[in-house]
Amino acid sequence: MGKKKTREFHTKRRFPDRGGKDWKGPIVDYKEVELLRKFLTTSSKIMSRKRAGTSAAEQRDLKRAIKYARFLALLSYTGK
Image (tube, rainbow, N blue to C red; front, top):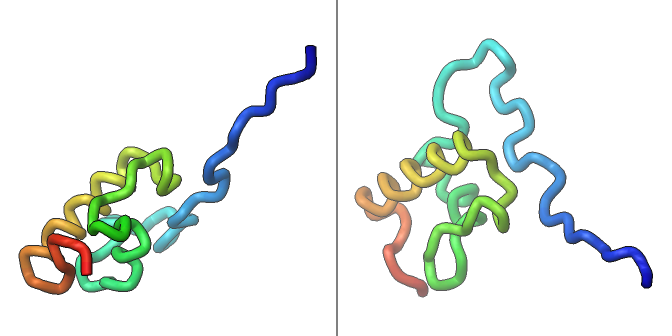
């Protein structure tokens, strides 16, 4: 039989070295609404790590930023 193809989702990092190695702080900020929208589905759900291509730390920062932006009414809780 033939070789089974493996699917590669996102091999590139979404936030490549953001801020440099010495930079301390969140990878993403709640005020970057356009960036946050890229990680939401059409029904305003947060994308999974596998689909978004983020690491665990990036996903945690992303989740906090999205939830805080929703609380401040910068993002909607539901779809359009």
